[in-house]
Length: 325
Image 1 (cartoon, rainbow, N blue to C red):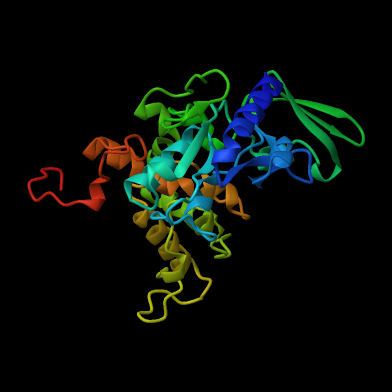
Image 2: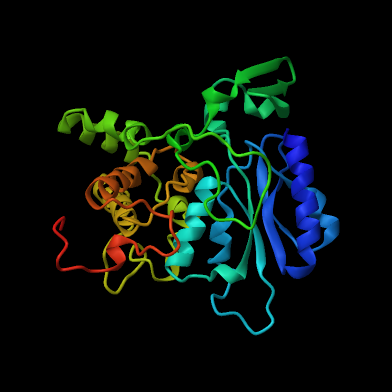
């Protein structure tokens, strides 16, 4: 199935490439179990494109971060092609909503997603330093190292975000590769079960949890940099000195403030793509903070980010008659 879908992707990109500036997709990295973003400008590069459960990166951030895609390009500029999974497409919708780019500037290759692999989980079962190859056979991850072959159920090593995914199929696309995927979740309750599990704990335990988790934070800002919707790094208040909001101290209060400022700036905008959590080198579940805000948005305001290009995110407007405020 993956090989068939890959061939279909190559064919569609080959047909579209003459009309595009480039196509942003996933390609095989130096490790057999990793993919890396690739920027296809020539037909000879199309064979680099791949897809499947190893394609974890949300590529939409490349459209609005250096080298930036101009929302109002020069006359005659060609569109840019991009491969998106379901959650990635929601980020694309949000970027269009906020006018960081126009719909006409992108050609979207939609790829139904059946979950992406979390290699932190795999690393707890297999010594990744000895991995020779990694493939997927049906619903099994097959990892070969120098001594043995490990067969791991794919369901056991998916990224945490995937278990509550309600939108595995792209919500916006020009062409679709492969058959539609079945959502793993169909309700708010199942989508936010990790949030509910944490909320069920006493306040003291929740505080201990976040103090323990954020104590590992090294303030590398990988979570901020990986987020497609966090687009103001050059003016980020985290690094501002006039006014000075935060210092470079490494204590828990400073870390708390950074993560909650980051989350609040994404309130009503976060699409749950999980890039912040994937990029974190300290394995901190930072997406949980945004998920809590997303749940509040859905329950109080009936809004979920990245579903409708025409919708206006609640916190980007003001209605004095809103009874929920």
